[in-house]
Image (cartoon, rainbow, N blue to C red; front, side, top):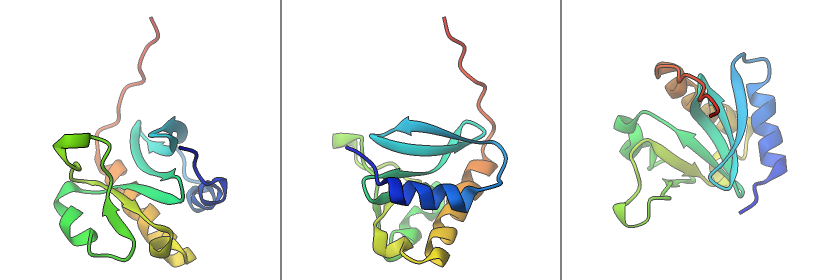
Length: 117
């Protein structure tokens, strides 16, 4: 699946100036990592947002939010959401979701870069 370059550009702009952000192709889209942890990404037209797993159920009630499930039969993992464009159509909506992803990624221990063999 390809991802929306327009939505990725909006996310880049929202993240602009924040140090430590790395872009990486993941999940058939683009992900924005902080300290090696995914914060937010774009998958098709949807945002991928990583949040505190304890907040998953309440955040799924927000407009456009749905589970992000690549696991198949195991079901969607807590803490991983997709947000359809109506949920982040406005700049304020995008800022809110990107902020949630950045806040959660910031709370996690930094990952050490993998060494190549």
